[in-house]
Image (cartoon, rainbow, N blue to C red; front, side):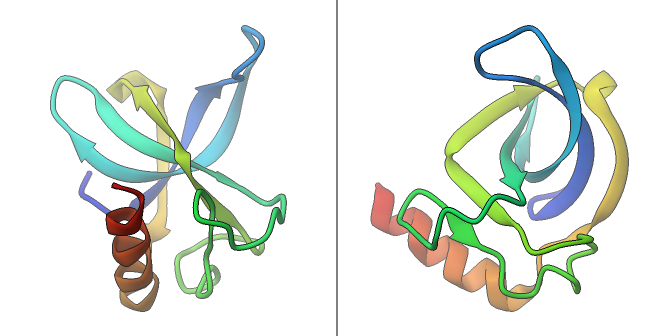
Amino acid sequence: MKRYDIWRANVRFEDSPEVKARPVLIIGSAAYIIAYKITGTDRGDELDEYRIRYWHEAGLVKESSVRINKAIKLVKGDMIEKVGELDERDRLILEFRLMTLQ
């Protein structure tokens, strides 16, 4: 797994113990895999959410947003399969957005 890979992973809901397979954007890995949730819900292109412009090229099946305010820790056993990787054009915009949040 490398930075900007998109994987399907078993992710626990924020407010319940329920687990759902959903896409995540890999940010880094060491003892844990650090990822951002990806959602199909369009909340706009706000500072804490990034609407993926090249979602199809990234291997996603529908328009999606990265929830950059929702970094999560995963373990290797949570990972199901690699979907694709974020397009270079989206990477550049996302990097700028992340620098703006710091």
